[in-house]
Image (cartoon, rainbow, N blue to C red; front, side, top):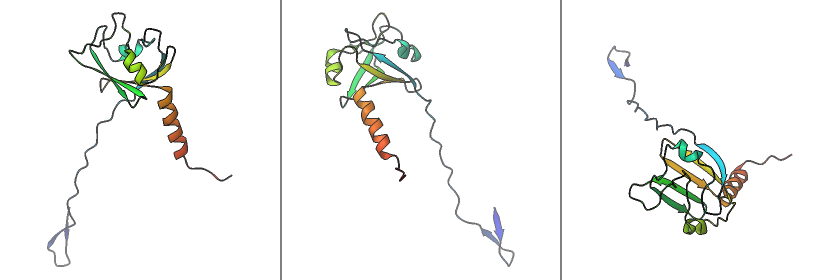
Length: 140
């Protein structure tokens, strides 16, 4: 909008304001807790079904600091979802994340990103501790 001075001349009312770009919103993850069987498979197949990844889909498995495993589709990978539709974790991945038979994992699925993240109990412990220590304390 243009303002007028006391003499009737047009005066700019300030610098133009830039329009902010709103980042895309990522859909909240779908989560479940599942166990690891003796063969290294995740017991629950629902996470893969939420991603619409059929059996024998080639995947990449990336352990992150021994605390979590990131799973994405990767054409040409030698690793794949089993014929029965389970996610199989090779022994090297299980060792890297200190996972034994029966271990429970929090599995978060991000369909918009085509991503599955499996969090170990150690990862959850670290996240919860960081969260609770960051909370303000009340003097009662």
